[in-house]
Image (cartoon, rainbow, N blue to C red; front, side, top):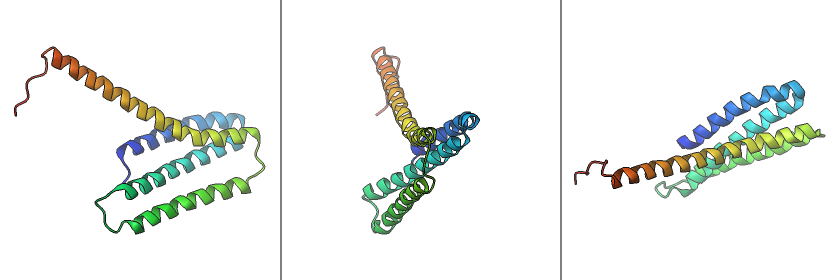
Amino acid sequence: MVPVFIWRVLRSTAIATVLIAPYLWVYHRNSAIAFLISSFWMMGNLVAWTAVVLTGIRPDREGKALPLLGFLAAKLVLLIGGVITLSMTAPHSRTQILAITGGITLVLLVLVLKALGAVIMNARTKSRERRQKSAGLVPAQDA
């Protein structure tokens, strides 16, 4: 259901989160916990939004209202859970607020960097194919 690109983003984000959290743990344990929770919470949100968008835009599926409603409900539960968690753990120190913001932003940063990398690699591949074709290095395709 979830595209390979999103799984790669989630895997890279999880690795980055696991590498950054011990650094925060040394200086401020509560911030490390807040960073971990917010990062994994945002990864759950990314999966929920991906499911909502993919279910909503697929024209080939009849009767998609129930799955779409289920994914929207999961997204709503994640949103309400995040708000309740933030309000129950208040007041937050500045480092905790930065850690929460960093955990949420990390997922978006990895998503943008992965997308830019894919665009750059695709452009390089097409450029290489054009150069090879103009130099006559690409064999003619049989029709």
